Image (cartoon, rainbow, N blue to C red; front, side, top):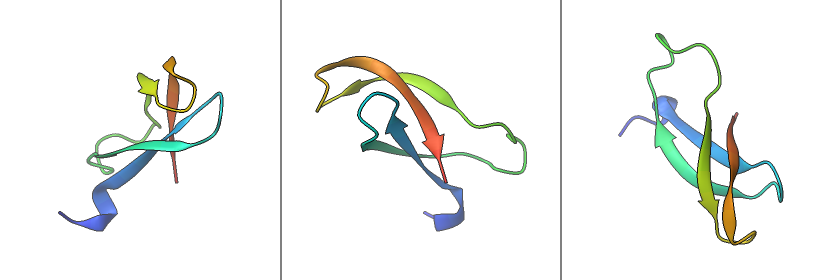
Length: 51
């Protein structure tokens, strides 16, 4: 899996990186924002894409 396609998702509440994913950066220019389960907050929170 190429490293340039990898992205990290960070919890907006506690600022921990919980998830990794991949995306095509040539077609998707905006940053993703998803609702995911955070293990440290122990609830579903918004996760935003980081650098």
